[in-house]
Picture 1 (cartoon, rainbow, N blue to C red):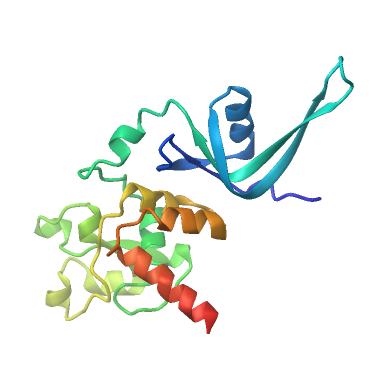
Picture 2: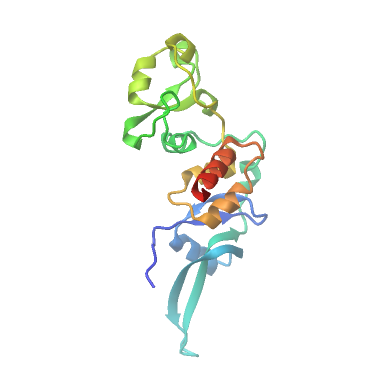
Amino acid sequence: MTYDLSQQVLRTDAAGMPLDWISYQEAVRCYYAGQVLYACGNPLYTVHGGICAATGKQSVLEINSIIATAGEPQSRWHHRANYTPPLSNKTLFSRDDYMCMYCGNDFQRSDLSRDHVTPISQRGVDTWNNVVTACKRCNNFKAGRTPEQAGMQLIAVPFTPTHAEYVYLRGRRVLSDQMEFLRSHFPRRSPLRKRLQANDRLRFY
């Protein structure tokens, strides 16, 4: 069987709260260090190890798409109400589904930019709630103005993702079981949850 070795494993804390993405090599190290408490999701990799001199049998390690690990103190603050994940263009564009929030068209990452709804020149801040994805044409047209001043309208209101949402946004290729696991940790009224549900309905029909 051929595996896609670039596929990431979702790591959680002991309570099952999402932490981050790790490679299969990191997952193997967690197993051999005795840090894995349990696994869920679908089988992802089968890793063959060394041969036991006493039995002559080769060790085999099954790695699932989601593993829970012990001793993760960072999870104590990742899930606080006042936690704000770091802002980057990659996660911003992913939050907005690689769509310009002004013209509504989809673009490649190279054609997108970060726009400050209230411009920095007008005392705007570089935070999740004040930035949206914009194509370079719309951003250049808006320039140092607010949407109202430029006669433009936002398609969606910017929001700050929770840590579970942030983990989802950082995923390179999120498998269906990983997506369902992460989505179960999204707030009930999460705009991201609503978008994924809408995408599911479109695929169904």
